[in-house]
Image (tube, rainbow, N blue to C red; front, side, top):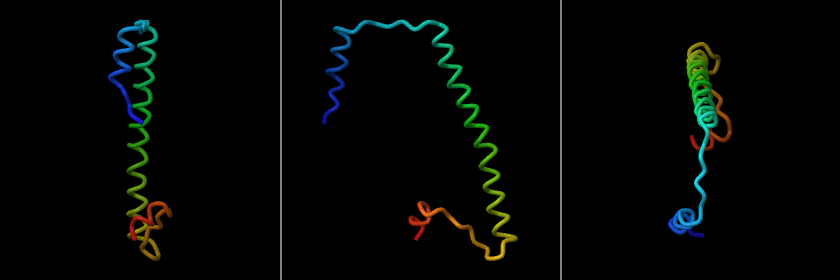
Length: 78
């Protein structure tokens, strides 16, 4: 099934009604983007070092010196 984006754009240009966004709506959208970015950045700063430290701990002081991967990752490693 084709996209037909050119047709849709021409149709919207001919018959579409331009919508204006209020300043409050636009600022709310940007605020939500900023908050989600900060949450993702904060989680990545906290989670990634923890995973690395756990992996290093298991390699150095573990009994069998191996890290058990989930099945969906381990099937690509074989």
